[in-house]
Structure formats: structure tokens, C-alpha cells
Image (cartoon, rainbow, N blue to C red; front, side, top):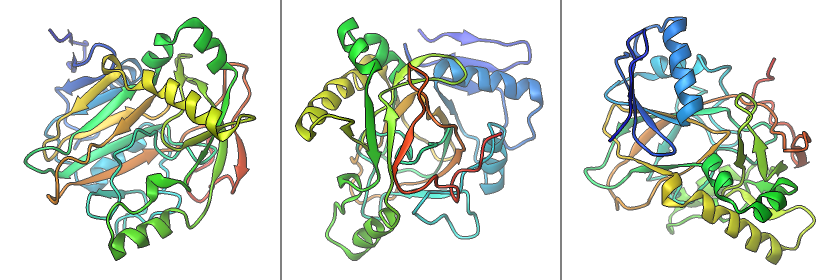
Length: 305
């Protein structure tokens, strides 16, 4: 049975997963939120890592306004263009030739990946098209002690130039999307175990963009990353969001991964993503991420105060 919390301000926070996820009721995100209401939402996000707001039916400006409560916004993407006239909104469509059906954390190939991602459902297929969101904190806690000790010491190089963006369909639009995605090449060495800057929780900071372990061979890297990733995707750590048009989902990009199963054929699926600028990750030893190739992506991520 789900847990229901009734804060004094009237929010209805319903836990929907054992380790990750809550639905938030009793709030209209189309309106200006007072500080007390937003504080409750932010507290719920830190606790549950992924929040689902049903039937909000936001427009562009309302999504931007709500996302900006969490901090300065990034532009839509370091390399992929935004929707027309909205530089902070990324279209997430299944018809561009690439579908995000690999586990990943958003934009980890840059030095300062997003803090928070917001996804707004515009068009949803009649079946399929769900989003899976995993707790990387739960994954870290599941590791046997020898693996935790090892993971605490590792750094992984994340890059946008790998087969995540290879065309899955033989068509011209897919090839053009791939060219856009790698039009600037980034490589960043991040700690495999990231310490959350607000809660202090440790989580596995890997996912699809993580391609090799620093100072290890390609074969060794693949084996270790595959082993650690298996803990992220254990069913205990995964929330499945079944979308309805008008829903909004918010997840903490610092301690989650997500995956969009490619199970809806040629039906239309359209979401709009707005992301909040994040900080430079740090590991257990306090060392920050470092750029291996490319730049600080300042055109994408505003400087954090």
C-alpha cells in the first residue's frame, strides 16, 4: 500500500515505489507557487528522487517557470536544437531516428550535468511509451562492500560520441540527428560514485554515456561498468511511469538514471524537456569531475553561484 503524507500546507504526497517515486496531488503547477509549497515539493524530490504530477497540462511558459524554481535553466541541449522560439525546451520525439532506449543520466558528457530534469507529456501513444527511472542511490547501497570500496575509487569517462546516437533507422533524418548530436565532441571524467551535494547520499554516476574507466582497458572498463550498472537496473530500484497527456515528471538528475522503452512502434510520442543547471560532481574523496575533451559547455550550462 502506498504511503500518503499530508503536509500542513495541503500537499498530498503519495509514495508509489519502495525506493523511488512519489505522486504529488493538491497543487496546480499552472499557478505561481508560494515558497512554502515549493519547499515541500523540493523536499519530496530530494527524498523520493522522482515526482509525478498528473493532469497538469502546462504550456511552455508554465513549464519553464516551474523548472526555474529549482535554479537557473540550461539551454535545451549542448548540440541538439530546441523547439522553435524556446531556447530552453528540448523536443523528445520518437520520430527523429533515435530513441532513448538505453539507461542514461541526462547530459553527463559535460562537466556540469543538469541538476534536475522536467518532462512534460504532449502526445502519448495508446500503449507503450513509458519511462523507467532508477535510483542510483539504491544501487550503491545494494553493492557488496568489496564492490563499494572499489567503486568509491573509480572515475569514468563519459562522452556523447558513441552508439547511443547512432541511427536506429536507415533514413536521412536519423543521420542528420546523429551529426547534430556529435557536432561538438565532449569527454568528461566523472567519479563513478557521486556524492549528492544537498543530501550527502552516494549514488552510482554511470549510465550509457560512461564508456570507459580511467586507467583501465576497454575490456576491463566494460566488465566493471556492466557489473555496476546491473545494480542500478534491479527491479527494486526502478519506477515505471505510465504517461497520460498533460502529466509532468521531475527527477533528480544527480542520483537517477532513466530509460524510455522503444515499444510503441510508429505511433507518435512527444515530450518536452526542460533541465536545470547543475554543479560539477564530486567523488567520495572530494575530487571534482574534469574535462578530458571539449570545453565547459558554458553555452549550455549557466555558471552556478
